View 1 (spheres, helix red, strand yellow):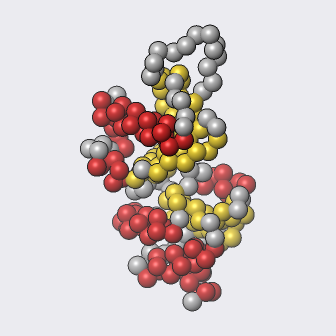
View 2 (cartoon, helix red, strand yellow):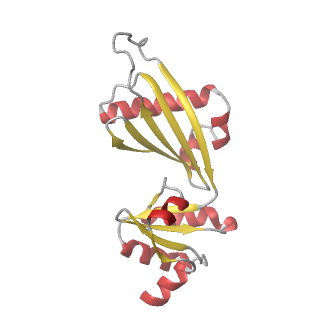
Length: 192
């Protein structure tokens, strides 16, 4: 599990498939109101509270992005209390959960050298294709149609970058397209 503070009242939690399976959970368990899921969520909030010094009470909005073969990203927003005179019960948390599922494998990278080295590894493993974009000072590699090798692809991508919580549509709309297709092959061809 990886935690990142985005703003004063918003945190990002990334859980891999291994994190979920270690706790006896699957992505589908989120839809159920299971005790295991509630316990995991409270454990995550407690860890975030300890790490970032947040006091998490009241209402939290949870956006869950399910990433193909990668796990999930949760954006947790602590909503402002409307009436400071009305304290919440100690430890009371009301969750509002929304889910978005993505079949696209999309990773972000801090520099182009990481993407180039990754392309060499992907090509060596027989994984080709992909599109490359630049957005908000980060590089984004999207891989589509790697169903049989999705886990292998994600493992290699995770060695060089991080899963993106942005949708491919946002990156296409606001970012710059570097290579529309066959990015792995083109990078290998031009740099090796």
